[in-house]
Length: 552
Image (tube, rainbow, N blue to C red; front, top):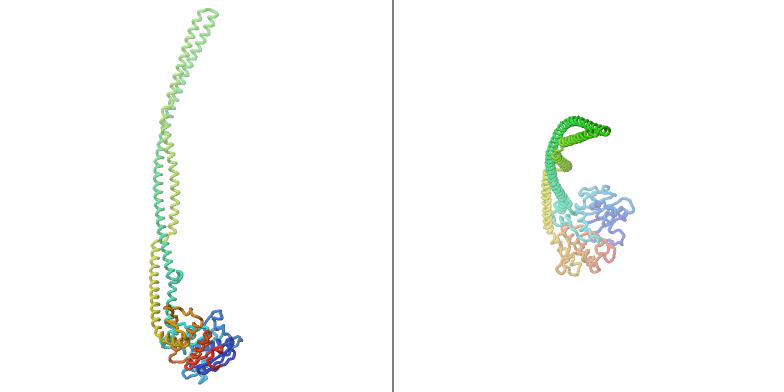
């Protein structure tokens, strides 16, 4: 395959620029800022268009980076020859990819051709954009080789048709993506979320069981309160019966005492009335005796001394009357004293004391009953609150069982995915090892040409290169920039040989030797000369020291 010529209407700073390519080496020696990288990117864009990107940074968005400085139509055309036919690609670009246009012309007929689609780069080179940028498009800004599925597929010669680009790497990435849905870092993902949900449900079950224990405790306390209330009420009723009996006895006793008192009062009234009559008679006697005495004294004084004898008789009668009066009075008082109900006082006092004690006991029982009723009411409210907030343990246990079953299924799926990923990776590595021998041989060949110093190298199936020193393998990051570029160039050239065994693509070298020393640059120029004998080489340089031969 050879490039023939191109026309750039507008692309970055290049405007109405034409170039005719020759076979073999095409040396483009221009100063910095002329647009060498712009030209190289234009060739790539003709075959691959622009990568769909919404990145704002110009360095990461080629559409923005190479939008025409001076305005106008953005694009151009490129003529090339392949398999004996000459085609012309015409592409113009818009601000967005939907505004892009693509046409392919057959230069023999000048008619539009449909031999290739707008994915012409992938269809011709059997490489996607990234694989192309990592193989025949060698820029000093990105020399290192990074394997991808497109490169791996072509290196292993497994492409059966033009669409066979989607390979194991995409499958592995897809599997890993699905696995991340199940498990993510930071205890995230469906499995972690489900485990958290199960743990929460288990805590809820534990809380519910504790809740049930609390409800049962409240129920027992309520039963105990009811039992105590009944016992206290029974005791209180028994006491009340005692009080009632004492009260009945007191009432009966009082009634009997009242009857006795009434009887005695009635009898007393009769006695008093009789006594009053007797006293009246005795008083009359006394009065008569006094009168006799007085009359006898007066008559004795005035008439005869013998009349004193009569007065003495009257005095005796008076004394006898007074004595009888006092005797009758003492008897009355004695009768009155024995007729009062004082002989039952002691017994009544005992009943009164017992009654007061029982009443006090009942008052205490009433307070205790009130306290028990209040406590019972509190326990009932707490029990009802717990019952209202309670969820059935059976319901939660069923939920946990369902969630654990779902978790087992998720873990099973995750383990299947993990094993599939592992087996795919192992198969991919085994499969990729087929091209490793040829890549290693090609790399060592170019390394021996460009480097006079002996380097022990090691290449893995991902085309990562390590340097072995003192029995230890080290990353090439430990090396200088010049050595890293040297290894990258050797890997690129080995990769081109491995990729294109039966066809000869064009190679773009965008000043890849800028970091090499003078000795290695001279050897690199010799390598470019040898490459140009087999491939069409478009070699961009900005310094005379890196020129291989005369050129544009």
